[in-house]
Image (tube, rainbow, N blue to C red):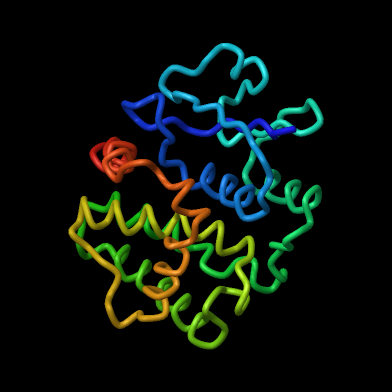
Length: 214
């Protein structure tokens, strides 16, 4: 029986998969483990009644396990790992936070209106740290096999690439070759192709209000 999962619909296209990196992380986990699932696309601008009844917070992703709806991608991914242990995706605890500061630093830089406020350098520092880790340990964070930490980073790096390219004409420096190779590796996986936002413009529409109102 397929698992039910609620994920974000695209901004301005409620019938199309949206651009939430936390939803994609959950879908990636299900895809990598070959767990069948049924998707409910939730228009976050006009949330359906039934969704708010089972989930008053109104947040996605939301997944149904044993007739119980559960939110929070960290909790959901942990439960999927528990219920479907093969193939194992758990990351050793000492590596679980690798790259974890990249997303907040990217958001700060994206919203920044001041070129000298240090947000670009803060992001570069985090990307350099990831590059250094991958140089010693790669191609994935935990070596040869993909794990949960990669599935969390993949959508965030994709958002970084698309949003900073569009709004700031900014790209990750070519010198960070391990990060570039890592992104190519992640984005070319079948699971990523199947779960990424349908079009880049949906991601741009999703980020536009945050950039314009910063």
